[in-house]
Length: 139
Image 1 (cartoon, rainbow, N blue to C red):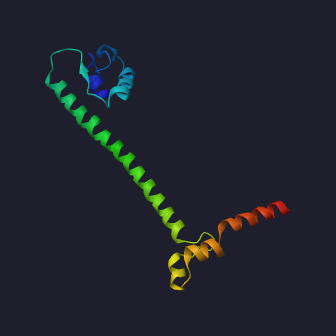
Image 2: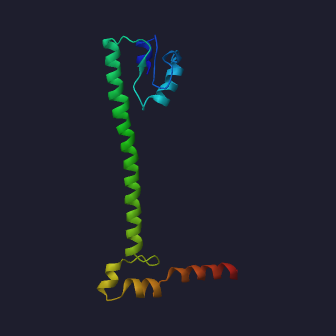
Image 3: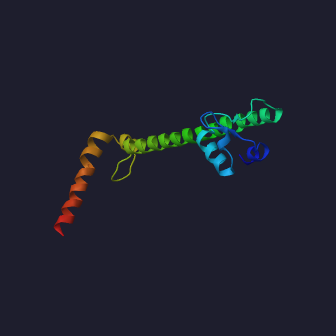
C-alpha cells in the first residue's frame, strides 16, 4: 500500500472507484480495504509502464492470491477444529456415563447393558436433576 502510494503518486484506484480519489495514504488504505481483495489497481493513465506491470503482478500475487488463501485457510481450519471438538464431545457423551464417568467398554465387559440398564435406569441424569431441585426447594 505505502509502496504503491510512494512509487505511483499520480494516482491509481480500483474498478469501482475513481483513480483520482486515491490522493492521500488514508484514502488509499480505505480503498485497499474495500476494493483490494476483489480486483487489482486501475491506473489513471492509459499507458502501462514496466513498473506498473510489476506492481499489478505483485499485487495480484501477494494480496489477492496469497492473503486470500491465508484468510480462507484460517476460516477452514477454524471450522475443522470446531467440527473435531463437536465429534469429541459427542463421542464422550455416547460412550461415557454422565454421572460416574465409567466408559461403555467397562460395562460391556461385565455384561451390563450400557444404554438400557446403566444410563437409563441406574444413573438416569434427570433423576439426579430432579433430586437437586427437590433439595433446593426443601431448604
